[in-house]
Length: 372
Image (tube, rainbow, N blue to C red; front, side, top):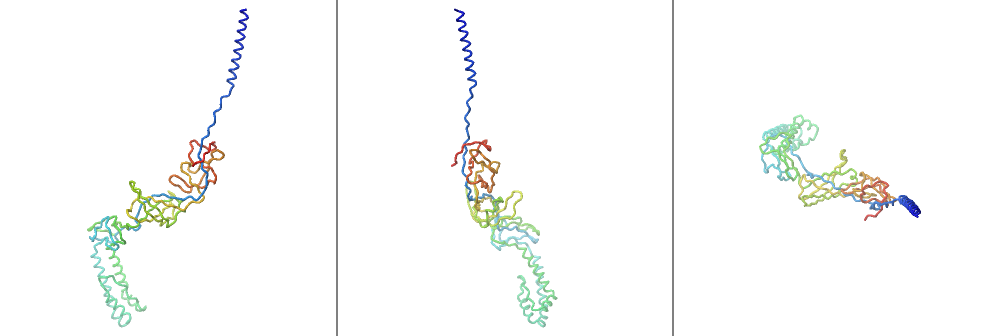
């Protein structure tokens, strides 16, 4: 009896072990559950090319449109005038800026005038006899001869004989020598060429001025020019006479003026690939040397599209979505703004990725969502 029980228990153990082994093997054979694939959601916008307005922002420094650097063409001691020759002094057109002592030179000029006067006097008797008509003209000239005033033009000869006669008396040579001395004498007094202000002065009364020495700078503070550098690709959108908005941001106090493009340089800077554009402006509170910002509205770019800088890849490519997969498309940049660029090369209807994607690559599967 005991032997039968033992055999029965042994059979149960064997069966139980075989069943357990079978269940364990089947459990190991079950496949591990596959993780569900999660696709990244991207925001897209449908491309529609159109005329994109261009706004160019550039900074530049103001310079007076009318300015002169004052140099001396003669030598002498500077004399005092009615106004101090100091920076900030205002002058009207024609007022004396600098007066250089010319006593010695003036005496030489008067002596030369006297020589000319004596020569003309000496030919009058011969003219009375041989050229009666010429005598009247030369006699009137001599009577109006004023030593204190610039000499007038000589009478025109009535014939070749008269001309040769006057030439033989050395009158023409003496006249032009005298005229030359008058021109040099005028350089001892430097006058203001226009209404303006003295911005620099390097001499004072009593200073010995040398020939070719710089004496100062004089500007017209009513009209200024602003030079800005514009990218060569933007030049076709600009035109002379176009209005420009000029702004000055100084400690939060914003001031604006209206300027006009007056000149566009025809040369491209080889280093920066930019072109100089000159803007003329007038207004109060403008000073030479100020740095201002110019906002230029250029001609619209046709058949283009504007995209943010943040979505550019390597500066010249963008992502589009095609069949729920990312695709890289090269673009041609036409104009650059502070936060965006105007491009060509995108076809109408393309789904452009509107926001940057971390870890994106060409062929990546994505979920598409229209951007607002």
